Length: 161
Length: 168
View 1: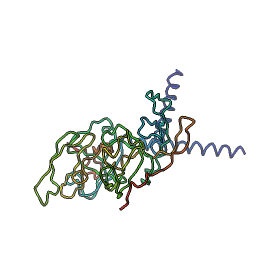
View 2: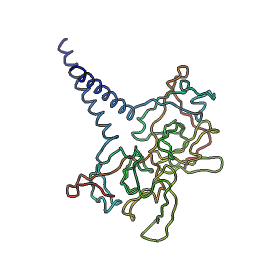
View 3: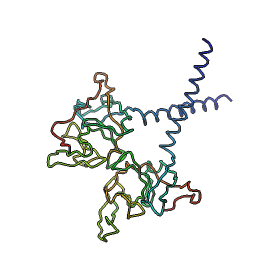
View 4: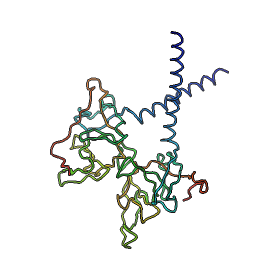
């Protein structure tokens, strides 16, 4: 009987350590820093097609310290399970001019980004699906700021403006 | 020399409790307070001018529905406002992606990945009729139960308004 008690106690202690560890992991991942694997042609030449591992910090968008030119990780407005990596082109109140299909026509449109929204675009305007298709993005969909590339090692370093 | 270690232990306890609470409220369920009369009569049915915070409804928000965004017509959801990410709103889902929702003036198509939300008290509610469809990514949880005040404890039922939605 006493033996079982000791085993049960031990198991409880282990379980609580694991739970705490997982909780700390979750909080760090969603409030401080996380790593993401991003791939696809829409951010060429900043990010490669084959896939880069980048570090994303989740602090500055909560403090409202994002500005145009920052790389951000956002939740896709078309599919909430997917994330996109794009560059902020304009903040709320800014005027933005864009062309819907730069490969075919040179006609462009312009509009003012409404309150509480940002305008995001991929660096590779020819294949990117971004604000030019789905319009200004609500600020609440921003998940973090991409600030550093850790893989591949040859291009390790911070992203400049 | 005892005091620093006692303080250290208290700090450690507080940190652990905070981290666990944050995780549970992010992943499983949390409690929020509903302000305003936009969801009357489901929440805050008594509309008195002196809304003291004790008589306002506290509700249980479950987050498990966010794993695969399994939301249905008539669910009451919490979402952050598309115009101001710091504000949270509580409204009822009227239309899901692909639906055509009938409003006073015309019929609106709900685009992919969005939902159409409206308050139960349409006279004083700021909802999709003013800011349009809301991206599902802004939805923060589904309200399942009322926890406070004691005489109103109970589950929140799913009720969808009649003749508003024509699925395509």
